[in-house]
Image (tube, rainbow, N blue to C red; front, side, top):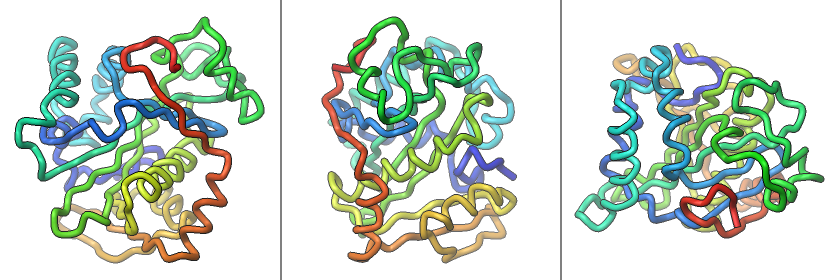
Length: 258
């Protein structure tokens, strides 16, 4: 029964950490995506402490079917995600971005604040000014899984807004659109799926607004599967919705994108 800020189904989602143990992060390790409300950056060691704090939440553990880890274990896991791509873990590929908030007027206390950017008109400040680390403006994450060896054109997408003060602002919607753009233009995807808990009506509505249609219901996992087929018409719609998005290089491990 997940809330609207977490579009992933606990039954089919065998734990965020579990997925990534068999994943390769090479797809996007040097890519930054700049949007109106969010900046998407690769998951690096700089982000581990804040992610670790998020995953102390019993609610997030339940919704992601994850077990609590120590901070040292989180660092080790992050390293393994980036280093194990050449060790035979090829049945699952993944592009993961941490989601950084773009709003200056966000509430000050809770890692959703940044003094470096406004909306799109000021988003370049995020790249040009100093004074705030990426960790301090982290809001959540968005993932794209390529899980079907028989259909490399299919990607499973999920999003989580982990910071309570950052929810209900449209960050998840833009993050999903940006990730879909990345999937279409960089990975050649033509189909997207989202698996969402049956009681998660806000997330279901969000994906329906993004033209996803329900294709399956699992009573075992208590989830619904929604799918979007990227016809030429849908592709043009996506490109229009994301025409403002900029792709820039990202320097791994730096406190500032470059």
